[in-house]
Image 1 (cartoon, rainbow, N blue to C red):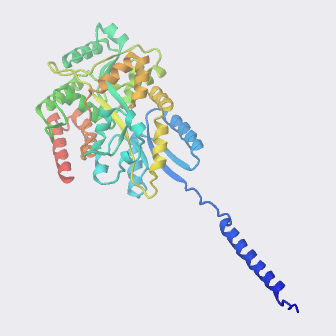
Image 2 (spheres, one colour):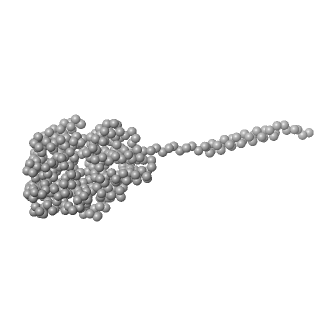
Image 3 (cartoon, one colour):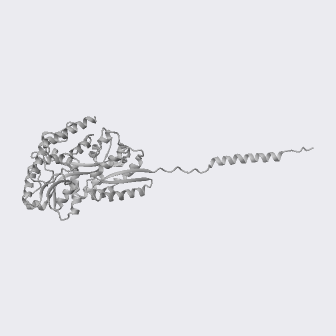
Length: 427
């Protein structure tokens, strides 16, 4: 007799349902629900730049827009300010604990000493680092830390009005102080223009003192110590004070700025002045009829010729939103050959990158010569933490020396004492 098998069908159904559940569960684990990707974070770069000319702001605005278009997650807040107010803008930002991520300036050592700056080696790409002129890079580092990088450079030279020289019977630009005095006397005798422009305005007193110190055989610092009131420096400042007293300079050296002097010279009312490479780019645009020439900075008779260079730089402050990758991308874009070359040409500077330097040197013997001079030039003592304070203090001395509130020796003694005290405070 065949036995009935009770419960076989229900059991198979149950097993089948269990298998379906397990398989379904397994499939769900293998193909989870899609999860939204995390949002990419935006980066902010506050860039405070100095205004060199009317070209500066449009050039940088164009560059920033192009960069943001190519890098939609990076916002660049650009602020362009004239040198007269630049210091006030970024020092206010620092005091409010909102320093710029990137600053175009000419000083850095005091901020480095206070621990406010990023190490630029952690930011700039190896490609950019390899394209910067080594002698300029070296000036922007202290104890092996790269607190800044060079941005633009100039060499200073004597610029003169060829037409006035012809009328006065001056055959060549003066190279010594005695020749400078004689040329200025001949120009004065014409009665049509001032002889020599001494710049003791707020913007350039430190530059004029550098011409005087280096040209007299002196320096700002010697053997690691401030040497501002050395006998050679005092002799040099005394000589230029005598030029002013004799009426051989323009009448208000402490008021007319370098840019204003360039316009005065362009208008035919000044025969000689010391300026940077930008003279040849800026002045001819405004005064195309001006016949001008260029010569070396005159020095004390018997002293070797000098080359004086100035370079401005970029620093990056530590902020609560510092994004080094974003900064690196922006700096690569800022120094990209095409854009950087355009800026250099339009502003009249010397480049700080070897690639643009080589390209411009192929086209111009003048730029090639100027870049060679820049490699051997003397510069401000920018590595000294007290330099910013010393620079500011020099601005107070021009008027005092010119109008006999202080003798040249007393003025340099005071500046020497200030520099020493400031350095001692920062040790």
